[in-house]
Length: 464
Image 1 (cartoon, rainbow, N blue to C red):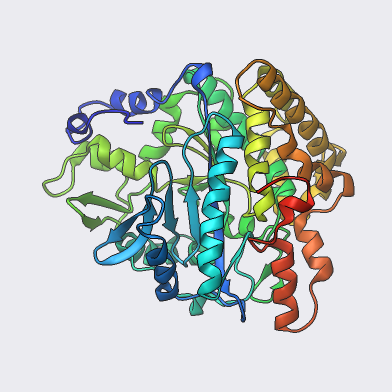
Image 2 (image 1 turned 60 degrees about the vertical axis):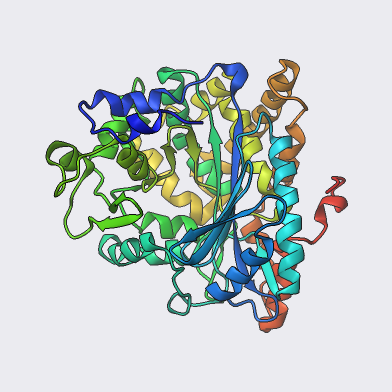
C-alpha cells in the first residue's frame, strides 16, 4: 500500500508533522486489518551443516527466477532476492533467506503462501545439496567463516556494527527470526499495541526460544539470538522505553527515530555512508547533508534501519521470535494476532503484564532469553503467565472468527505452543537434551528438530 505518492515522497520535508502523518496513514478500519508473516531460515550444506556461500545461494535464486512469477532482485549485478506478485524473497547479510509474505486477511492465507514457497525452495535446494533450518542461530559455522552477501548496504552496516556493540556482526550473519506485521485503527490503538507488544517480549522469548547452540556448543542461553541482539546497537535495538508508558503516540515514535544515527542515504541507487559521525535524522532534517534535503523517502529508509523489538513502518512489526521449525512458524502470528487484535485479550495482557515497574520488567526481559519459561515473574514463573496468555489468545482467535474478522478459525495454530507450555520445555531445551555425538549425528538431530521439508505437518494432522 502506498502511503504517499512518489512526488510527495521525494519532496523536501517542511515540518516534523509530516513524519507523524506518515505513520498515521497506516491506520485502517478493523474490518480491513490483516496479518503479515516474515520468516527467516538458515541455509546450510546438507552434508556438513556449515553455512553455504553466496554463490550457492545465488544458484538457488537463479533456479527459482522466472518460475511462478518470481522476478530477480539485483544489487548491481548480484542477484540478492526475488519479487513475486504478493511476496518477496530476500537475503540477510550471512545468507539467511527470508520470505516476506503479503498482508493477508487471516493466518490461513499466510500459511498457504508460506507452504507454496517452502515447497519450491526445498525441492530446488535438495538438488543443490542445501538444507533449510528453522533455528535462531547458526549452529556450527564460526562468525569469521561466514562471508558477507554482496549488498551495498552491508558494506556500510558491517563496519559500523563493530563500533556499537560486541555482537552486531553476529546478529547480521548468524541469527534468524520471525516477524509479524499487524494493522491498527488510529493513534491510540497503535500506541496501545506497541506498548503491549513490548511488554509481551519476555513471553515471546520464552515460548519461541530456539537457539541454544552457537558454533557447535551450548551457549548458556535458550535464545542466544536474544543475547546477541541485546549487544548489537543500543541506539536502534531492544526496547523503546518511552513507548512502554501509557498515553504515548506517533510523536513519541518520531522523537525516538529522529535521534537514531543514520546508516546511509540513497539517491538514484547510490548510497551515501553516514556512519562516520553520529549524524542523526534530526540533524539531517535541520541542516541537510551536502546538497541533499530530507525527504519522506529518506524517512522510510531510515525507519527500515531501526531494529527494536517492536517497530512501526508504519504497520506494527513484532520482531522477538527466534526462527522456528516449518510447522510452527505460523504459531507466532497466531499468538500475536490473538493477543493484539481483540479487546478482551488486550485487557488480559494489560492485567497480566502492565503493572510491573520499569526496572523489574527489564530484569524479566533480560532473563527471558536465558531462562525461558522458568524466568521468575512476580513470585511465580513466566511459564504460568504464558499459559494464561496462550489460553486467552485461543479464545480471542475463536471470537475473531465468530465476528467474521477472519475467514476460518485460526486457534489451531496455537497447538504447538500448548504442547510447549504443558510439557514445560522449550524447543531449545528439547534440542539441548539431544545434543550429542559427532558432526553427522548432530546434523541429523538438527534436521529432525527443525529441518524444512520433514513432513511433520501430516504427523500433526495438517495437510501441506
